[in-house]
Length: 265
Image (cartoon, rainbow, N blue to C red; front, top):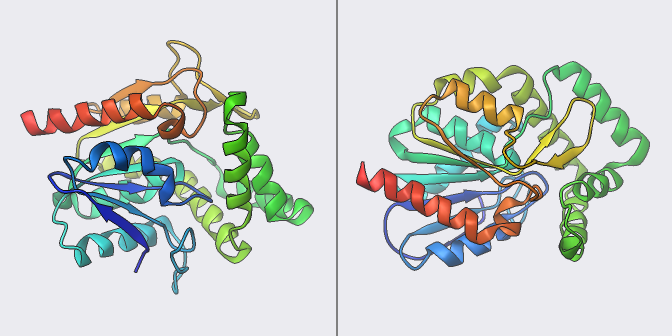
């Protein structure tokens, strides 16, 4: 089963899921904020943090099953699922497979890494062949922070990401590309639970990640809003990819509003 941290008391339970090359500690600001009034669970996805790799084939669906296993083993009947980046994909899948277990989804800076799996796979594998995964990871994390005051954090997160074993990192990234290219739209069409999107960055075609401009919405953010008419969203212009760290108070406040709206409903 996944490694996880659980603390706090109160409903609804908040279950936090990290992104690629990351771990559950990325959510400590939110766990600290919410654990006074809510049961909080932060997991390490398979092969990341302190969790063992999957024994079966890696996929976003398999990650969703692993998260659900934690809910089952811990007696969590329902939860608000909060995902960052890659972690948004398995919680979307879990909400489709078991909508009665999901109070709502909070998607923190979600994005799309591929629209053509074979082309993206070939490009990624060529990069790994040329640079090796650790160098690729360093380059990837260097493009996630834009404020110099987070340079030390950026370096630490890059080292952590680069330390993920290549036998986990590469198939996980390919599974993410596959989901993006072949499953993304159908998955969002199938979502029936409340959704909130907290967006801070975007990618222009052929360009690196960049922070949103004032009043701008990312294309992926727009796509979700178009497919889920009841979805809510908030943009964080000028903030890097780790929205929940750089804008911790604002993210927590918006999650609290989302929870309160579900309670009032």
